[in-house]
Length: 604
Image (cartoon, rainbow, N blue to C red; front, side, top):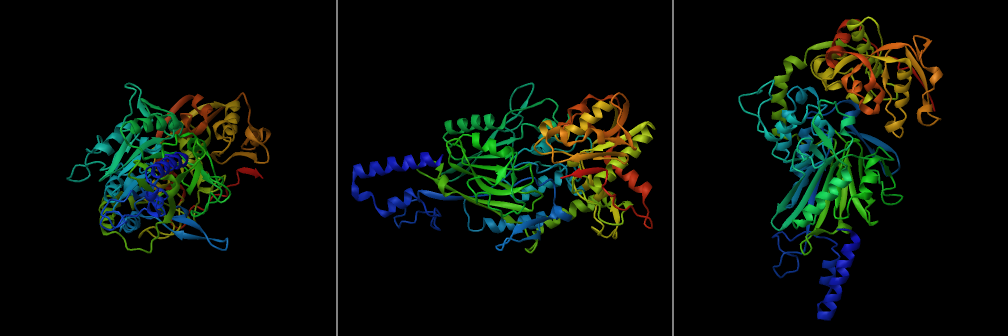
């Protein structure tokens, strides 16, 4: 319900009161029309002393997104958040880990009889070894213990295909790996919502499109969607047989359906997001005007979703924001995102009007909170982590290489990106000595390699578990032929087409160099004459043998030209390739140093 229609309802109600009896227009009636606080009396009755149920009921909505199976506290920058201080400075806070997330959520729920917990997708996928090795069953178990009520699907829920997603929802042992204990996996206690993901055969959603939360006489509908562009960021096999529909059209369609069923309070769970002007989790993105401090896809989506939807829980971009964006009627509407990896959770107060069955939007309050590590660990989560770590340890603790310092994944060109590209080039030459270069998508690099020991392995030791956390997708490393002209076009697609607004700079193997001029726009940002391989200019007519993962080979991340390569050869998985390279090129006494990351010359 928009604030405008809420005000119109108030005006109609006030007119009726005056017409019936002026004496009824008391301070109490005005307070009911404009709820300063909607908390019920402890008995659940109204606060007016007459034993009546209060007209307004505060409902606590706790939400988070993009957990990605991070059961243990994430390492490095992935396990920290930035907090803006009163004096304008910032500080970083260690955050995340489900042992702490469980405690924070449970403490937040205390005293809130009406509380619902929702998520914005990517609960699983690209997960660390403790979850990913077991097809994310550990994360689903953890979410059940967290009392998650509902989540939308994210793009990563399709990493292993729709059949595997259905197994996570419904339970059952993995079709290949079987059961991991004497107990059958029971699946998620919460519904996955996939309103805009349709079966190509039936034309119907593959999972529930919406779900209604009910507590006594209060009911709130949740519609879940993922980004329409999921096929561009997931391997072709993962989305085989599926259609992804427009987010706005889908939400508007099901909002009408919910309204026809008498559900007038609606929250949309959208796995698509925005980019706030500040990385601080507590940045006020409404400080200029409603939503002025956030940009990206979610802005247009929010501005076009029907005013019948009262709040949007979003994700995908791994950013933190809690602000308002005007709905189609121009009224502010809450839009939130809680960063990623379980580092934050959002606490939103929805004021439910029992008389209308709708949310009093003018009373919605929302804020992000840090999942700090200074609270007691939840014992049930500690036990869960211990159980799965015991199963994973024989594989995860095995050393696969040695490094002399942190090898980070941050930056336009990153040291870890160079290392992975070099590993794929070396493997490519094993498959075919004519391999010339390798390309790696930055989004496929999920964590840094840290020098400090993560367990008992010792400083500088890279374990299989750490390698798995870096590359958890089980992508294959493939070879294909591209012409020189196509290779140039691929590099230009980093900063043009679908990547124009948010460039995706490929990580490149040794020998490939070029200049990226950020003072220019579009494809011109890649300086054509500067592109060289081993010091020689790229010949547009020549053929180059290129190594890359199967995601890129399928044209993923907007690199459509990579989908046009010829003479394909499919190799082994990317983690095995990284493992082979680390093992072959490092020892305890001769560790690998971080690459210089000097192959791309950036002009700013």
